[in-house]
Image (cartoon, rainbow, N blue to C red; front, side, top):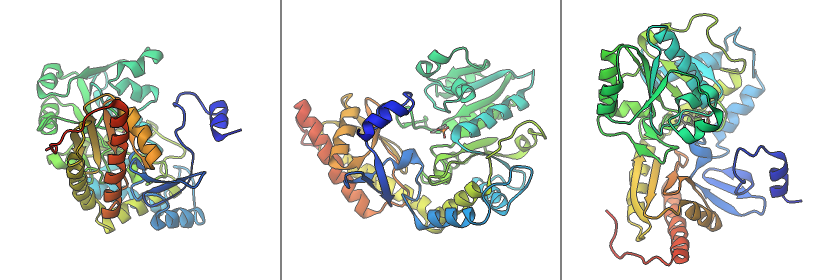
Length: 404
Ligand SMILES: *Cc1c(COP(=O)(O)O)cnc(C)c1O
């Protein structure tokens, strides 16, 4: 029996076939059961901010597990209070902010959905979200996710959510005083790393404020420094009413949070929401240590710098397959000129590079925030070899000009 047989028999079929089985990781490298080494530019989908087996992560887990892991939300613990204060500071909520802890991105967005309903009440039954944005797989967050093919097998959805195009015009046309909230994914990661139009967040802030609706920014993929700011909304210089975070804040430990600003912080009252595991001492200690290390090591600035370098290096690869590069910081999408992204991912795996294709035309790169020159150079070498493999298979001719 191979591991593929075990996986095919025992694991839920809602994921495709597992591409490899990894047994160990260190920094930006993974090893499979045969001892083959891979450069990891997926980082568990923007989760492993510090890479694999980072000493700060290992130490935080070990120490907190040996001290106090979980006591329930009847009680406070020091790591929980420290992480709440840290998140408020990094998000810039000021004193009036509050933090709700869950265990995943979906749970953070579920909390945000309930926040929107508490704000809206009977007067404001409408919630707006963006076409093609991804907010999660639970029934509530699926209702917020503007991808009809994902919703279709699970209809009917929770009512009240309407989808609009990501333009200021569409938002102006859709909004009125019966809208409780607008949900925004600041770079649409799962859709293929699609940037919002310039000025959209600024306009969305002004328009939602004018109509008394909450602006809720889903920073689950973009947060924790990934785009070269602690949170992507900060590039726009706005103050949202709430943001949701998960993925990168735990560095591999499952944790999510809803962070509220100003008056939105007073919407939840006792009994309106909860989670048994949410905010446990173990998870909050790890996330606190991960965020602390991102801050100490200057990894937000590193994400900005390495992201620019990576973008330039990709555009410098002489290949007819490479179109443009989207995204910001270390959340990059390579738009291919042919729908062969899955073939490029498979070729990359052969060459010892882990990347991902959110759709047929896009390669997504979300490496650890710790990458340096060595990883960058190795990426360019392996990715070039991977596109060559696919080009040869497609009998595409290389262009001679360098893409700009
Ligand atoms: C991954 C993701 C989610 C869902 O997070 P889970 O932890 O998988 O539930 C929600 N929103 C965005 C933008 C994401 O990238």
